[in-house]
Length: 249
Image (cartoon, rainbow, N blue to C red; front, side, top):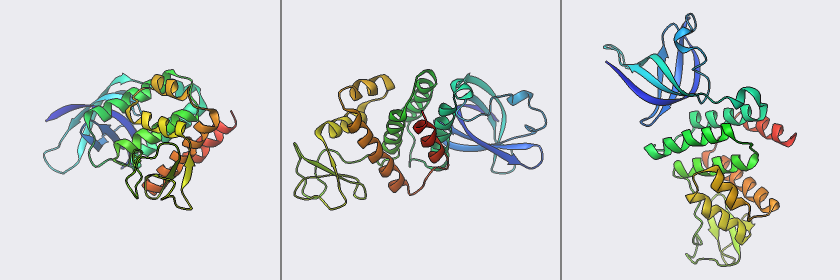
């Protein structure tokens, strides 16, 4: 029986001599399927199995065996800018790698739609490392690793003016409970992080960031990178080359 799901292409690898093993993100979670003969006859999948291409995937569960067969795909959206812009290519590779190697306990349909819309927005926009901060935060949030930003993790009080952030503990500490390794954050930085919890578009992100200094933005971007690496306990291979490309302008 053939069934169809919307899907983002995450990755592909060789399976046997002429087949490809294709990894997809769908509203029902991550799946992998064999594209029979995809390396020999490319007509069915021409340019449609590139990272983060949004497709309708036609899948078949064979009568024998546990795997899925990818019978074909219909294009819904193909990001064009990564083909022309090297910085975007690295960024899209980073997102695809993140989606491939980390995963939430449960993916909600609205989370899947957020990822699709975010990719479409990135494709149309001029981007900087600020968008990476946004992606890191939102993916942590989707994976159930959102930092605690309202109350001190030790005493439960709500700091009003002075904030410290503990990466290992995953949230804010007040002045009385701060640890030596905790990082000081300004009210503007805490306010931005709290807003990002609810923000869903790059347009709204840029509006929120317009009220924060460049140094404060750099600070929360660095913090979220460290938080991401610590709590996933994993470093994407694409991270270094992406950061180098943005540093070079």
